[in-house]
Image 1: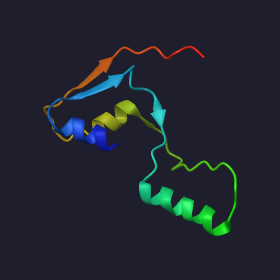
Image 2: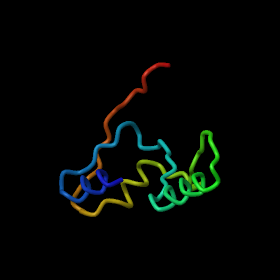
Image 3: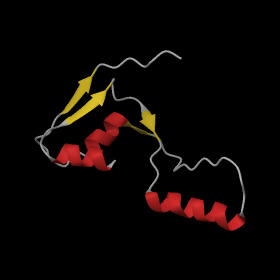
Length: 83
């Protein structure tokens, strides 16, 4: 997120790989720390998934984090690796 915001604010624009429809669940660092503390306090081992429960597309993120209105998002074709 920080690199995304910095790139969008410096006038260079953004490069979005693919069509921008890829979705991610972004979690605020304070929420992640709270989750880790809860796991530590309860002493539970295992694999934990921490989620905000809300998906955001890369294209939507680009639109909301574009701090420099002159910056443009450039889409770059991308094909995921097989496997």
